[in-house]
Image (cartoon, rainbow, N blue to C red; front, side):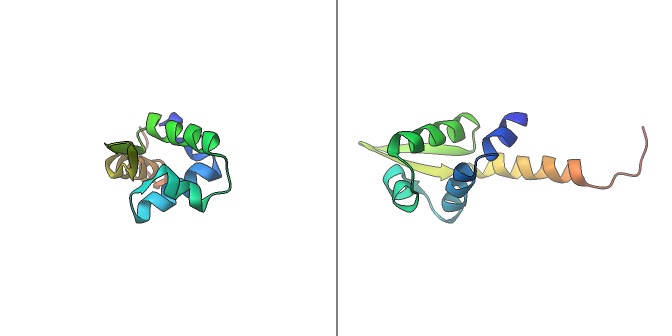
Length: 90
């Protein structure tokens, strides 16, 4: 889970995840909405893929990026568990 928090430390990666929450996008479509170079975007997308926060689907030469909702759901559940008030002492 620490890897995911490191991944989410970047505002650019959080912006990408917000975009993918709305719809699946290609790298070009993501690039159109950000003011970063394509190599920098590629690096961010690779980090998101390594953390399993995004999945890809190839159609010919086009790669479409999607939010990996199962990992995001697990992350949220773990985060809620960390932040919930647990009065029981072990």
